Image (cartoon, rainbow, N blue to C red; front, side, top):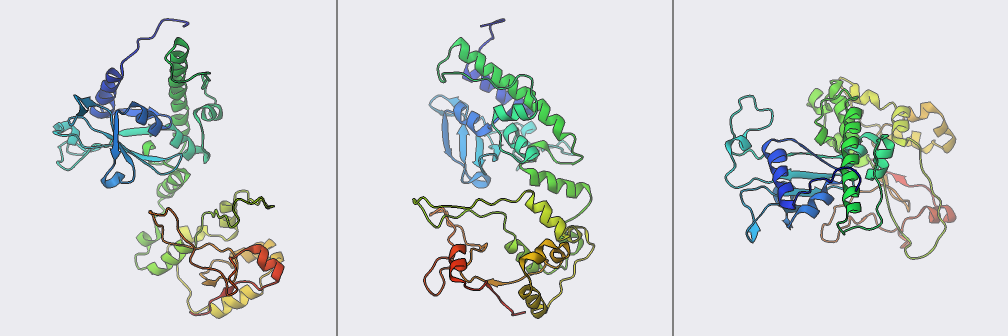
Length: 366
């Protein structure tokens, strides 16, 4: 190994440092893909409870033949491949310092307070800043880290080469952390960096920085049922498979910057910044007449898009439309209850085009 030989720590020695610095001193604990690292350090795991239900509770500090009750566990609840909720559990007989909330104005302990830790997962932060999933290698390339990730031929065997590989990982992670922190500081927002879970987190913080409150704060009497309509109408994406295990031709479609483009065309920003939003009711007939005259060429005219903001109840007629369903955790699905049409067919665009059936229907009840 080139250079001085590093001092190696046992797992117990390393975890003592983690407890002293990350828990007792409340320092920032930085990792890339935090759930992976913690699961490898833990000697035991159980199902997490309360706010972390659905995740795992990892025991890092053993005592004799079991868990050390005077040390916290670390809970991980995965949101997706890039994000996870993380936090210390409450340990038995915590010190008074452990029960003083972060940012406390009095500095006094609070009996029901549990310090959850300051965990910064660079994989999550890189996603929040770029809107793309990253590996350590790709994140280092994206942010021009000097000493990026290296590769090794064999994992799991402690050799000088493997120790050097892991030390390089630590160096790459620390340099990436500096780069990401520098990038994050460019955003004039008041969001704790460990709470930046996605680009949406940063976007909402910009709204707060611009003093733009949610609609119910600036207009408390706004009818909540219309907020429900808006939430039901929004659809962020759909994945479906009607034909499985058969090779078929497909058409791949994508839209570049669809959300900002539609937001601009429909002039939706005015609803975000308006002092008051007024809902126009009893306009089903005029809306229906306008929609029946709508055709593809009109959608290439900007003025058409400004007429689109409206709530319309659509009755499916054999088309694939966004739909909501109650999620079933036992079967891990959310069935589409719109069902087939009266001829027993599942909704597909191809059938509608081939058979020449007319478009979906619009409910005209006010």
